[in-house]
Image (cartoon, rainbow, N blue to C red; front, side, top):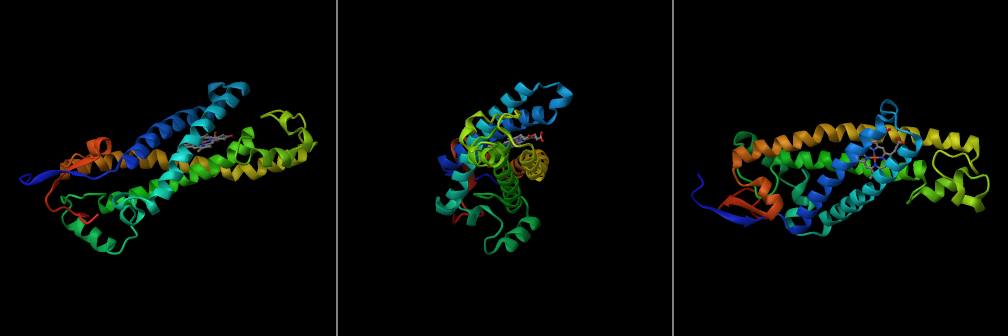
Length: 240
Ligand code: HEM
């Protein structure tokens, strides 16, 4: 079966860089997020909580910039990283899925049809995390992009915004602070639910890679490091 396999360049450097920055930032965000989430049980003090949120948000910015670049690249990048090739919306996807179900041992240059569904699910969960996280960065520690706006919305004196600090009531209108907390409550819920989704999706993604690699034997994991897959002369998605 492996008779006529050749090393084929599949993943450009930009995709590989995105992937590993994503892995590192999400892992750190999950660990720090879990500590914030269990703050009361772990006896985390207010100062430590502010510090953890500041670190979480700082890593969150790297995660967000990386994700935004990837989202844009999907429209303007090279063929294999385009959304038209990576997501399950392209023409002929249903046919591809039926073909895959019939003979799952086929080799794919890009993602197989189930892999495309997984990429979509991961992207949705990550985008929700990014959007909700960026809002919470503003409501919780008054960090950009919306921190100034939220600080202004609760300030007693708008000329003294720099004295407004996380968990402090200095220059804060109680009633409007209560409203801010009500506004942020469903956003935290969405942030936590998208976190649960990721915690389920990530192991499934890893399992999918293991199963696909055992079937295809094309070097899926090393392809995400050096860009090359070990492909037969004619493999699926070869036109990409
Ligand atoms: C995959 C990415 C992310 C994961 C897995 C994640 C996970 C979590 C978790 C589990 C919590 C604890 C929730 C709670 O205690 O209620 C949390 C809180 C928080 N996250 Fe994220 N997060 C991510 C991305 C981001 C981003 C991009 C930002 C902003 C730049 C951000 C900002 C925040 C803030 C401000 C909180 C504190 C909310 C609170 O008061 O509890 N997060 N995150």
